[in-house]
Length: 279
Ligand SMILES: Nc1ncnc2c1ncn2[C@@H]1O[C@H](COP(=O)(O)OP(=O)(O)OP(=O)(O)O)[C@@H](O)[C@H]1O
Ligand SMILES: [Mg+2]
Image (tube, rainbow, N blue to C red):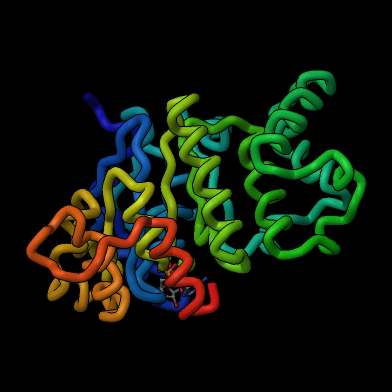
């Protein structure tokens, strides 16, 4: 199967000289849920922005369906192919009402107002944004709700691939789970490809088919979660907290019977994680 998205030797250097991506080669396939992890500043958000052409590579390429994002053939419809929900919803939300925010993308795609309305209602429902909120100002909502509005405003464009950067920031563990559940539902019912950028390992463990771990702008590890998280020495290089690894071997012990600690369900692991780290 040909990859939906592929990067080849992707480099990104910011104008101030910061080398954020240093030769990344990844392939993402239709219907996958990918966890993108790595220490602060390792390049996760930069890579995400390259995948939807918010940033243009300094060197190397990003291909979507076999065509480079810089190719004229792709201009204009990348937003329908790859949607990126910003790490901080405040960098994404700029409309006066929740409705206008979620309608912004479809209106930009020149859809008729009736179709726009259908898209807005559908996206709002799936993201858990209730009708009573439609006329409210996004800035007055809680951070968790702003994140949902940010997600809805991407879903309304129905991109094939959805990248959610840190869906758990500003959410408690319960809200994070709800968001992850609906992303998973989207993946299974509509065959969307989902990329989740997160620091919360139990989330990756529970929901992702594959994990990509970055370190200093390079790909350090790429495999199924149980394989990646069974390499604590390698992971330590990426500064994923040893306590997280310990917790992880806890939760994986059901699959690795030689580990004596009791098995934690992913739900318990997140709860546990949340209570210790205030997430
Ligand atoms: N606009 C920018 N200009 C210059 N340097 C930047 C810019 N944005 C990010 N960087 C730098 O690029 C590197 C990669 O940053 P990026 O935000 O992609 O990392 P990240 O893995 O998403 O980090 P975090 O976990 O903190 O969100 C870091 O060194 C960061 O300081
Ligand atoms: Mg980031």
